[in-house]
Every structure is written in structure tokens, then in C-alpha cells.
Image (tube, helix red, strand yellow):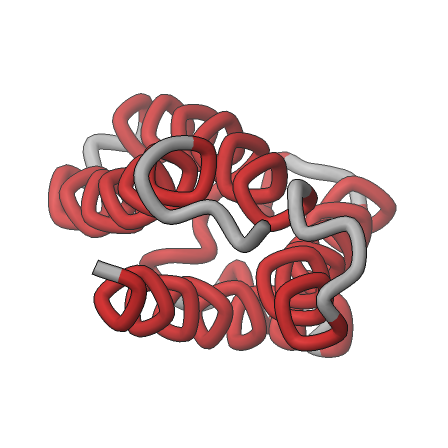
Length: 126
């Protein structure tokens, strides 16, 4: 179970890293050119960058506490925050009729729920 939780956490951290880097460092106009970035057309630059930074912080919150064995409760808390972020993403993509992206976000949501459940429940770090 611990290995499965680490794999899920690593996958989610990679997703958060990719999303965070793109939202933080790629211009909003360029993001809006892609199907998955349609939502950025009506969002402010500050909002898009803030989401990017939050996703980069999620990478830190998912990995660093466990590696340093400090404040390990931050791993499942970060996973719960990711669930909330994915609910927002699913609503946003749903409004734009992007069902494939809603399904992809639901996969990320399930990973985060698994991590939160596992680390709060049967496989805590302590």
C-alpha cells in the first residue's frame, strides 16, 4: 500500500509540476491557443499565475514533508487541496464543453482522494 501511495503521489506531483510550470511561465495568450487553455482567455494574468504557483506549491507539499520526515500531515492536506482544485477545474472545463478534460481532471481527483485517504488512514507516515 505504501508503494502504491508513493507512486500515486509521484504521478500527481508530476502533473502539478507540469501544470504549475506552464501556468507560471508560459504567457496567458499562448496558453489560450490550446484546447485545454481555453479557460485562460477570460481569466486575468494574475489568476492564471496564482494557480500556477499553487500547483508548484502542491508539488512541494506532496513530496518534501515525506522526504524530510517533517510535518508529514501536509501530504494528505495537500492532496485534499488538490481535490478542491480539481473540482474547480472540472466545473470550468465542463462549462466549456471539454468533457475529455473533465474526465482527465477526475482521474487526478481520484489519485488525490487515494493519497488523502491512504495517508490520513491506513498508511500514515508516523
